[in-house]
Image (cartoon, rainbow, N blue to C red; front, side, top):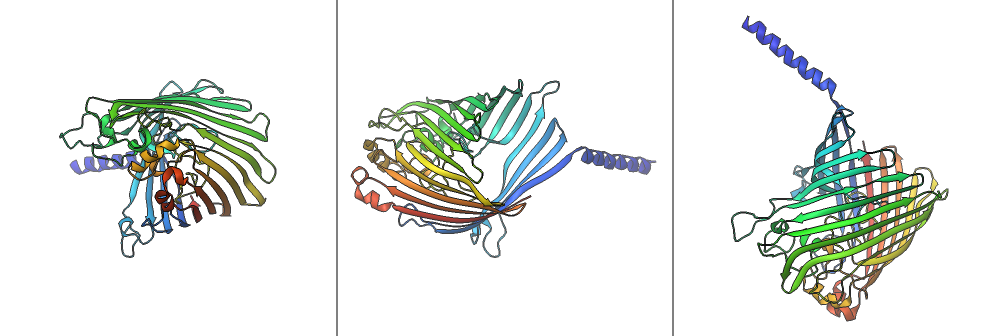
Length: 469
């Protein structure tokens, strides 16, 4: 009898597992990227390779229970530099870089139309000018909760709470962290009408002192992105920081094929402390836009931006807009708009502290499955030249946000991009990117020693192959 009961229980478990597997639809998608790239290094004599051969595999698995509930996990294997042992690229070694970039569930609150996304998720602020945002783009991977609701076909609301940093710093003077959390909260209000859409947004931040790493650290991204140039992240234990950002992005296609898009951003961060005589606050703004006209075989357009820069007083805080995980795709070499896993951002990852204007011919196509973009851009710094000595004394000589250059009003650059995509098969795309940056730093501002250490003419050529499945 016991054997019969055991067999019946086992059969029930098998049948239950089978019914669960049938109730959950599993979908897999992803991409393999292979990149072969040659790029000159901005800094002469830097001990880095000019040529890279890399690969990366990204795989997303959706576990779909119904239209109201699904789970998503996103794996990334790589970047793997060919031949590099620590990344599993050397002969005889196995790949060791497997990351979980996203792990979240999407669900709808019962009896409502409120959508919830909970967990480690891709996240960025809205931008209609280019694909990424200067404050938070990339997209950033962050853990948190997002709530979305559409009131009707014209109005919606998305609210979020994200925790990008917690328990990552340790003060050498104590055995526990007192304020090591960085929390972000805010909302976006997407509005869409015939030929026009606009999305205002707001984001606030509560910045724990230890969320910037320990007191001796000078390499935290928070130092570069939220603090004035040259400031150290060592704050007194009695102070927390706060920040706020607000903006709106808009796109008009009412007079199609003419398209106009604008992105307005403002940010303020105050860490409530005077450090080495410097007020640890940043307050600045940025506007960027594109105007283009779609023709049969190409889309000519004008791109432009202007971002506030530091004044001549290093002790009154910074007048540049603070960022967190910013990314600008305005160009594909000087900034962060590269395809796949190439090395770019020769000038900076964001437009902060610069202005620029350029002409582009986008989606040039006279042959099926082949399109190209030609872009020529002039850019210049908006920071006062009196800030150059502070930048030279800071960690990473002359660096701005996320290891980019700090450009003054006396410095300028010209960038040329020619990028092409060709679909070999439906799921296999060949991409080439050719870039040139001519950098002109002012000798009188920076001094000849620093100027001579920076390469004036910079070149990049990359070949990317992407298999999507």
